[in-house]
Image 1 (cartoon, rainbow, N blue to C red):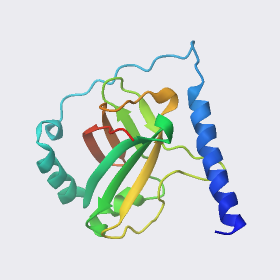
Image 2 (image 1 turned 90 degrees about the vertical axis):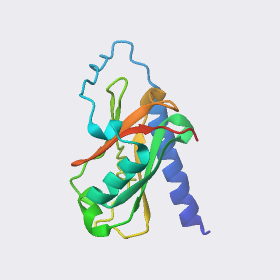
Image 3 (image 1 turned 30 degrees about the vertical axis):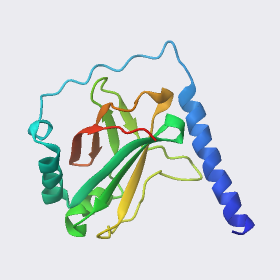
Image 4 (image 1 turned 60 degrees about the vertical axis):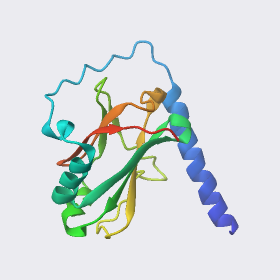
Length: 166
């Protein structure tokens, strides 16, 4: 690889490191978010294989994984597009993905460093068969392996997903 690509790679790693360090700050006077109360949805009761079928029927995607990365300071959500037409609403420019911890109700967002931009694939036309990713910030390593989370992207909701370790 030439020097330019090495320079770009180093800048990206520095941005991730900066986000991780900013997430480590401990504000003892920071307010605790209120608990996240919700009714149990039918999707939480349906077995995983049927839920994946529901996600495919409505959104044309298959959820692959949600796992910790960047030493636990980021969460990597991956999904495969099976039907590009159904999955198109997930790729809109105004879609703001969120990750909700089901036990604490904490809402995590996609970081957007100034020089790197939003840490998700921003294709506006999904391609069938391609695996896409969204990176969520995990300040203070709030989410741990085994936690149950919900991923929200516009009207799309994938509930009761178990976080895997890296």
